[in-house]
Each structure stands twice: as C-alpha cells, then as structure tokens.
Length: 444
Figure 1 (cartoon, rainbow, N blue to C red):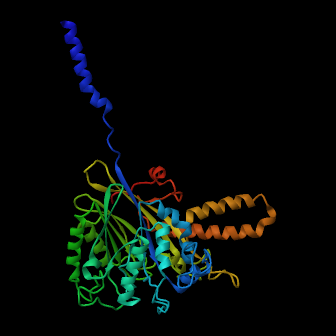
Figure 2: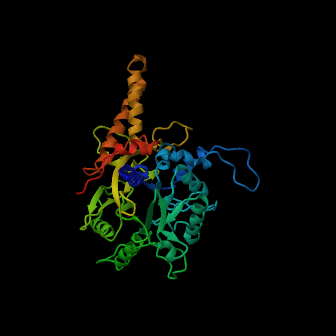
C-alpha cells in the first residue's frame, strides 16, 4: 500500500511538471523596422537621366508603351539604396511630383510631372508608402493629383496626404508589419499659393497653412485628428511638409508643433520641404513616452546643387542640397498585448551623385543617391591596392579627392544627429542579424 501511494505521488508530480517541460517558449518581442527617405523630385535633368538609362526589353508594340527592363530608366536612380529600402519592413519617402501619363503635361523649373514608370520603380526599389501631401501636389491640377494616386495604387504603393475628397486626403493609412499596426498621417503647410476647393467632395490636399498672425485655427483640429488616428494603431507616424527652404534650422513654430504632435499621440514626426537636412530630436512626453522628430530629411533624388565642387577651404554650404540620409527607426513590443515603444534610431549618410559639372561631351547624365560609408570603404580599398602600383598616381589622386569629398560631406551630415543617435551599418541585406549592432536612442 505504501509503495502504491509512492508511485501515485510520483505519477502526479510528473503530470504537474510535464506542462512546464513541454510548454512552448514565450514569443520573442515584436520588432518592426522602418526606413524614411527625403524628397523625390522629378527635375528636368532627373527625367532626362532616367530616359538616358532606359533599357528596352524588346521592340515597341503599336499602341503600347515600349517595354522596359528597368522601368524606363528610373530604377537607375534608386539603385545604390534599393537594398536598404527593400530590407525594411516599411520604407517611406516624400513624393514631390505628380505622376501622370499626359505626354503634353506642362513642366518647368517649379512645375513637376513624372511618368507612371516612377511609381513602378518606387515599388521595385522597396518603397511601400509615399507622402503626397506637399506643395507640388497640384502641379498638374486636380485631375493630375487624382491620377497620381491611381498610378501609385496600380504599382502597389500606398499613399497619404492627398485624396479625391477632403476626407480621403486626411484619412490615415494603417498597415501591419511584424505584428505591429503602423499608422501614417500626412499634411502640408504650403501649397504654392493654391487653396483647396470649397466643396469637400472635390480632390484635396491635407493642408494646415502657416498663419499670417497668431496661431492658425487648423492646429487644434489637426491635433484632434492625430489623437483619433493614434487610437487606430500601435504607432502613428506623422509626415509633415513644412519649414523654410535651404535653412538648416527648423522654424520655432514647427518645433512647437512637432512637440504637440508627439504629445497628441504620434510616435514620430518626419519632415520634408527645406531641401537640406535639419537636426533630429529625441522628445519625451510628460508621461515618459519617447518620440522621434526629424525636421527635414533633405532631398533623396533631385538635381539641386549640381555644380558643387568640394574645396578644402570652402564653407561647403553649396553642397547641402546634395546631403541626405536614410533614417532607420524601429519600434518594439516587449510582451504580447503590451505597448509598442521606440527602440532604435540610426542614420545612413547619403550623398546625391551628379555629373552635371564633370561629365564629358555626349556623356550621359548621372544622378543617383549613394551610401557614403559604402563609398568610403570602396575608395579606401582601391587606394590601398594602388599604393602597390606607383604608375597609377593620377588615378590615385582622383580617388583621394573623392574620398576627401565623401568624408567631408559625411561629417556635415552627422552634425544633424544629437548624442545617442547611431550611424547605421550600410550592410543591410541581413537586417535582422545586423540590427543588434545599432545603438538605441537615449531620452534627452
């Protein structure tokens, strides 16, 4: 009897312990990574660069566009950064041009248009969402604004900031990635002198204009929109078109508004329009929630500053419109059902290549954003190899000049990063394996 009782006790102990032995391990923390880029602008030479790199896939078919291997050459413009965009869970840029198929569209210095191939190339490069709420949204009139959205949707690129009605323009976009619901809201403070139509059922840009005096009445309504949108997602990113062009400091009213947007529920505020980089800021609410503000990410694909040449004694300001960065930001949910919090922030310095000044006669135009750290590594490796070949002194001098340019522009770009922000590794094809190598942003 005693032995039976002992066996029964052992058996019960095993039954109690077994669920612990065979229970599934707790799920890992949910982590989502986004990459943000600056303005994509279809300047005339940007369009010409794409056209000169057009690779035909075969003979044209009557009544149809000529088939292309590289989206009519637009893929060339995104080539060096495409893997960074693709390896993010969501990549976002500001699309500062209408996209229409109108071959007679009027374009000039400050009036833009791009072909549908640009939308297809953005998708191929890994861009999942674009902000269309900016001052060039109406460059091809209201019909062009709506057609732009149709081409983006056909390419599989989400959009936010404009719409076929006022409600659609202000509607947040919500998408899920890695188990995290991401929300996006976009608005502009400038519209190149235009106003939205009076009728709410006509195409609109999400617009909160700068006031002539005092605080604009639209701010309170904007903050209420942010509060509402924040309840529909785990993280809300607000994309803003604001600021003064070619100034490296944000406007004081934009700083105040950025803080108010974070306080209202935004997890990050990402700015565009000045065409130059402006500082990043870590902002913590009174409740202790950390948010990120990037006042301006500058240009990403553009033809500005094309005649800049680096000289050791120059201020370097003439090249600021070619300085850029890709901003890698991650959010993490530590436990199922828990809050999603800002995790890591890191920047990749980018330089916009442009051969307007250096190209030889009949040479094709070349405009392309490149990752500076990759360029530096390649240049240093090549110079090390040339050191063993004395007869290559001329090539070495050219490489040394380019290396000096890259290092100088990198230094200027990194001045926009406050203490606690990291410089990301440019080798992003193994994003999850490399993520641990970045440094988390610290609270102020």
